[in-house]
Length: 356
Image (cartoon, rainbow, N blue to C red; front, side):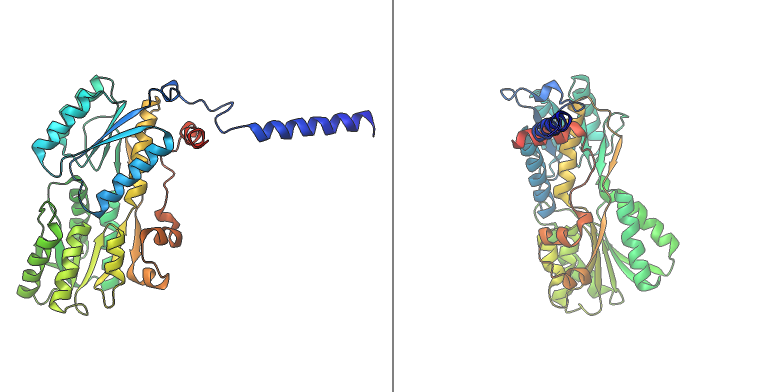
């Protein structure tokens, strides 16, 4: 073997060996110093106004999974729709001086002073389904205006612009208010869609049950209703049970928002009236929130609006693909899975390092 060939082979071997030992965090990817001390892990506080229901349970699981993958700690504060408790928990969380604060489902007038206080104290804030007056605090949402638009457009196409609607929504919650804005445009665009009645009430731990009672009354009083549009799945569940109770499955159909294992089971039941829902996976949404908070801790300039695109899910699709839970749904419908948002290269490197 010639000297040149020996030299060439030696260089190839050395290059391959060095590539085999490279990690994603080397060279051009630098993990910020705050994440490099295992004896002093990063702390994130998650303060939630609403924490009950299948959606919120899956949201918390997603937040905890992302925190664990990144080697950071997350502490949840759940106000359970108690405004006074929500304020108390915001104060407590800020007093603990976490590295970042995630606020979920707050209203602007309540949370704005605490956001300002946290930011002034050097605690970066990220919000979910909350509108805030700040150019630096990211607002993460399921793109609720698009949710309202896509859902109502689908109904319009399905019914050719003619239906008698029972509308289910609750005022005062930012995501539901945004969806309502799109719904009002829908009524303007399709004048032959007639809103016959509206139902909407929040009852801690019992919204679906209270909705069932009220929907039964509305359907009994207005037998011409043939479409239910529900802007939250707790409302939709109550409507589905009311329709089943009255035996109106063949006449009244439900179109809603949000997905969960429980919702899927209701949709795939024999003769279910729940025809379609539009949703993001709350598990993935929460992971985006944690990554966005981590990005702010690391000094990234994060976009003001972090919008997670929703996906339409029909009963027909679930049945055709034998879907019985969210994990199976994500396999059949990958667009519902992990979002690419807020996956900065150094955050991927942090996850890879923590997995070693």
